[in-house]
Image 1 (spheres, rainbow, N blue to C red):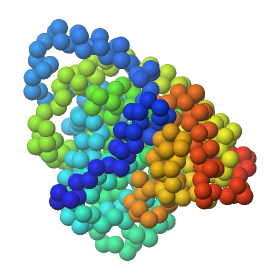
Image 2: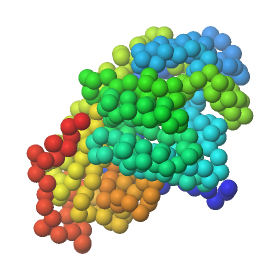
Image 3: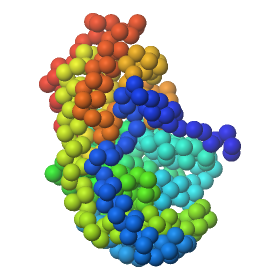
Image 4: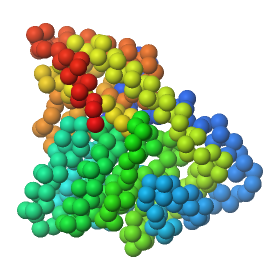
Length: 403
């Protein structure tokens, strides 16, 4: 078991990002300038003055559950309070669901590129991964998925990110979600939907959680990206019986909620509506996204494909003529610009070594412009690079951004 506990490759890049001379597109961090930090400080001080009980062992606030119940109702997922579990961040939700359901050497349906924090937990169980490819800018390949479902007797779980996929930035359209829900009902498997980016939407279209289409889905989310990552406040929505078991596992894991943090979130939501909090964030991130797309089109001198995200924090680039994995150290050293190579997210490490993930929410527009230019300069100066590699036409790149 010990050998299965491995550090995340992504953490290496995040540590490098602390250097002063580095521009970082690596970590999926919010911009602190649009987080409600001053309001949170006021709430902390109020709670500290009101009662020492905030710092004692306590069960989850019913008031916070009620607020989450209202949030889910607006997402067309009506639920009772006993169908909600408050957790210490969405990562704990992944940990708990894995320990409830995953069994040694069992098979797991999974997207071919996946959030590394999920893989780190799933690897504890020595699972047989069945990676499902994604159609570029669309989402999971349902025909491929159904082919596997028809040939395997027991495939009980599928882990997905539908909104602003990490790392590919894809948001699934409504029809794809409905068709996946129909497959889940037909073949009786459980969908584990992780939704850390659903609040950060750059689209006027509303996309609903999988649980709005099927009861064979659980939903994991958090306030980390919009209120504060450090508060570690998230939730799971599922059937009552499942939530009860997850709550028992949680008690074994940490004994109690992080009561001061959860009370702060609850009190904060008493005073501020989510739209009020999210609006300035989405406005700034959309501006930064446009800065990145403009910089790519202006400065990148080689062929690449990308998806313009409708949610989240990431742009996914694919370079048909460059092995990013092979040259990543050279590119870091020469450009002083950090990115995450696509292979860091691949279930099968032998595939797609020609991609990178770029974060656009944390760096400034000036850093985005400079970082993309420096990346381009380092790529075209690769010893193996040929200037004869065609530069993809701007009109073609734009077509790939249409959902």
